[in-house]
Length: 338
Ligand code: PEP
Ligand code: MN
Image (tube, rainbow, N blue to C red):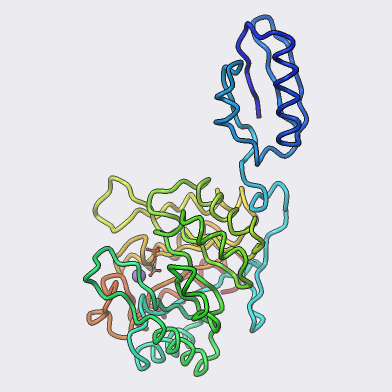
């Protein structure tokens, strides 16, 4: 971090200031006196340094951060990719492509078990299914709640597929005993109390990027979970709000190489929420694999036109089969397994 001081700073003020910073943030300081201004460089781990508080000191002209404000999620401090291993031994982020598929919401035993079997047959490794749904309208279907999680567990018993489901509040955690990966949805990406709580939970977390959040904000949210003790975080780009209206969201495909460069955490793409359109899921999935994503999370329904949530973006099992065939072609060009 570079701090430029105002040009009339007295020697005593400078000494008091640098002593204050060294003691408060446990960093070193490097002072250089120019013709017109004095610059103080902070040396060491500056992730806990509060730029605003420094900028508010009377002798400070400007502050510039030159190091990322996240540490645990930062590839600089952890060069090797994080590989997450699930209970059944499945590895995420090991260089292969992991596909998660299933309905937006669990609706019935028949629905979730049928979809689970179909996606498994096509090569999905994890089953998704929402039991607590963050809907824009309070009058829309809110999910089956605890019953939905029980049905997911049944689908797991039938197929052996590990399951992922979204949590919306810390109080729901006791219901997630049999869930293998906990999803934090886009709308909760900056629910910091929930993130801190999940940092104490011994399960991997799939953290979705917020509708209007920057890559740095996503990484800071991952940092919340990791700083509280849980380092098994999967990052998921699921489309962001832009001026474009022809799709539900705009898939920020650039987020994949950028996140892979900045962080060691596995990066997934959700082409279903990114586009909101069934036919677009396949090309976006192929693009995600080509861009270096570690996995995909895709919505599949046995009868999309009757789905209680997100039918317009849900694939039929045979459409999903086609996606799997095509992403395998891209993956094999990159020497990766799906
Ligand atoms: C979902 O996965 O069903 C979901 C609600 O996703 P998002 O939080 O990305 O909107
Ligand atoms: Mn959905």
